Amino acid sequence: MHNIRVPDTWTIAELAAEYDVTLRTIRFYEDRGLLTPERRGTVRVYHPRDRVRLGLILRGKRLGFSLDEIATIVDMYDAEPGEEGQLEYLLAQITTRRADLEQRRQDLEQTLKELTELEARCQADLTALRQRT
Amino acid sequence: MHNIRVPDTWTIAELAAEYDVTLRTIRFYEDRGLLTPERRGTVRVYHPRDRVRLGLILRGKRLGFSLDEIATIVDMYDAEPGEEGQLEYLLAQITTRRADLEQRRQDLEQTLKELTELEARCQADLTALRQRT
DNA sequence: CTTGACGCTTACGTAAACGTAAAGCACAGT
DNA sequence: ACTGTGCTTTACGTTTACGTAAGCGTCAAG
Picture 1 (cartoon, rainbow over the protein chains, first blue to last red):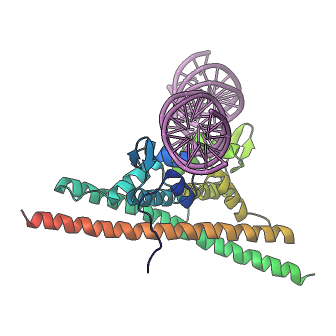
Picture 2: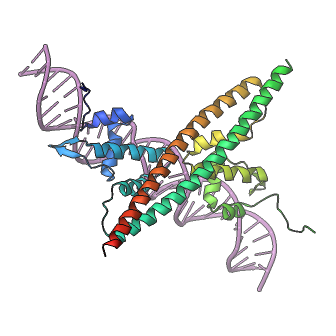
C-alpha cells in the first residue's frame, strides 16, 4: 500500500520552498541557461531533471563556484554520449575540474587542521584561566 | 654560509608578484581592514604578519568565502588570549566555521565522486565507440 | 634637470548574482 | 462581481570585489 504520492512535476514555488531559495533566484538561473522548465501557457513546470539540476547548482554555489563554472559542470552531467571529439573534450573538462576540486580540498583540509589546532589552544587557555581563579 | 637573504619586510609590489594579485587588490584588502601594513611616510611596508594574512585571505577566497567571512576567520588566527568571554566567543566561532567547512567537504567529496563516475562512463563510451570502428 | 620607475590617493566604472517594486493575467472561492 | 492567491514580465536598484584611469609625490640614473 504505497499511496504516498511522489510528484513528477513541480511549480516554481514548490522548488523554491524545497531548496530554500527565492522565485527570483530560480528564474535567474533559467535566464542564465541553467534551468529549462516546460511551459504550460506562460507558467513554468519543473520536471525531475530540473529539480536535480537545481540541486547541483546550489551545491556548486556552496563550493564557491561562479554560475558560469557551474553551468559547465552541470552540463557535463547530462551530456549525450555524442561523438568522439565531444567525448574527448568532456574528458578534458573533467580533468580540469578535478584538479580544481583537489586544490580546494587541500585548502579545506589545511584550514580544518589549523582550526582544530586553534580550538585546542583556546581550550587550553580557557582551562588555564579557570585554574587560576 | 647561509647568505641567502630572507627579507623580513616587503613592498606592495613584491607581495603582489609573489601571490599573483594586483596592487589594487592588496590596497583593497587594507581598506577592508584585512591588512594593516606599516607606513614609512606614505609608503606601505609589509611585515611577515601581513604576508601570512594575505596568504590566508587568498586561501579563503579559493574556498569561496566572502571577504567579510574571511575577515572573521583571519582575525581568529591572531586573536590575543584575552578574557574568558572572548575565548568562549572565539570557540563558538570556531565551531560554526568548522560546521561550515565540514559541509563543504561533504559537497566536495560528493562532487569528486560523481566526477569520477562520469569520467569512467566517458572512457567506456569512448572505447566502445572506437571498438566499433 | 628631466625622465622613468614606483608608490600614493581619489573616484568613477563594471561584472556577478540576485533584490525589489510595478503592473498585469488567470482562476478559485465567497 | 469582487477579492485573493499564484504566477508572469520588465526593469531599475544593490552589494561585493575589484578594474581602470587621472593626477600627484619622490627618488635614482643618465
